[in-house]
Length: 516
Image 1 (cartoon, rainbow, N blue to C red):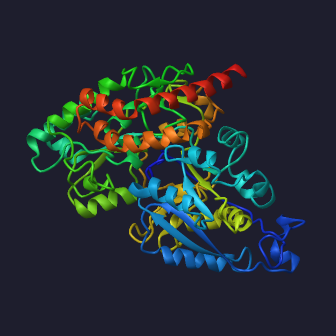
Image 2 (cartoon, rainbow, N blue to C red; image 1 turned 30 degrees about the vertical axis):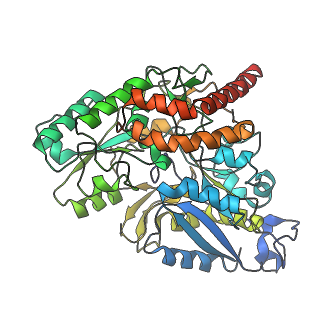
Image 3 (cartoon, rainbow, N blue to C red; image 1 turned 60 degrees about the horizontal axis):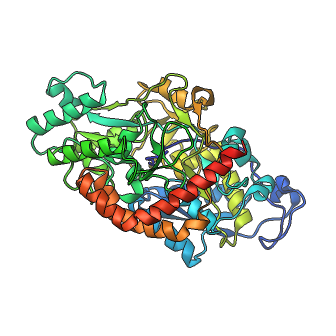
């Protein structure tokens, strides 16, 4: 999840087969009596259409090569050209919201529960996809299990295509193994040992920040406290449907109750105080709030620990690090409990691809998604040019050949649980943990599985609250501000709005549970 790749990193993989093309001739709006036959078999050819697709991340150097190959493959079938707009992760929430509100023609757009998908759906920005997928998206439907579809509908409708393959995101800390061994610290097994290691780095390794994490609103799942919450096996404190990646409202104990941080402070206050002490003691990277890419300081050798939304690193991650720190070495540390039933899941995915209402090419957008869910096309969009960027090892694995030309970002536009490959050189330490994440039966079912929050009644409150949250939350949840003093200021400005959001969320949850 949750990333992305970091999240969601959180987040999540795969895609593949069969091409669904409408038989319409001339304009996009023409009807087709049998979309599955395709334009070639009907003797007609679709007019060319350019799809504008907005996704997060940075544009890879060889993106134009991949687009050219994709357009070549699509020319005689769905006849689509691609205009891919990349938005920096730190700007994602604001940029996508402003773009949708402006009415600019976008044909496919990334969104997520941790971003603003519920709000955008409630405001009517996205097209329901049930009928379009039935007619043009056979592969999209078949490449995702029914359990995934059932748990990721909104008011009973498919409002966006879920991108993922697991039922909970992995989470870990990437640690400088070379520094740990240099300082004589044994392999880290507990969170206390992780923090103890950070203190040793502070004492013995001047010039290296012991700890860094996500300091921007768009990535706050990976803040110091946000990451800490992901391995809470006592209360299972976790994010709500209303605020996505904010813990000012939170669930715990799997009892259907909504808690408000301004009123019910534990266990989160303890984590806030812990983070505050870390910051006061000089453990936290000094520019944590201004680093748009929070991984970069770590990758350039400026930090010894960083939060991460998956269990391992992978060859690309390792090689990028090695290019900056040739003598460095990495390892991941996680406190995930793989015991059956230890983790709670509502089977909700973290990343989605939606078709905006303003799109003039809705049918073709779904056709493109279907095309991208064919194995060979999935491989192209996920890994780049075969033989140049990667090579296949059977149907399930791949080997990277070029880590700089084309980065893997399939999780923001094509992921499905059938077609995703595994990096043959990836860290295999936690393979058994990944297997747990992919097994729905390994989880305790969230009491709120299938619930979706309708935010329409509190849209003004959400807007007001989000504006205030941006002022306080990243600093508060990374220890930069004192929690006692900051929560008082935060509550004075956002308390009434947050309370109304909490009450509306609880009202809808109570109604949902009453029908079960």
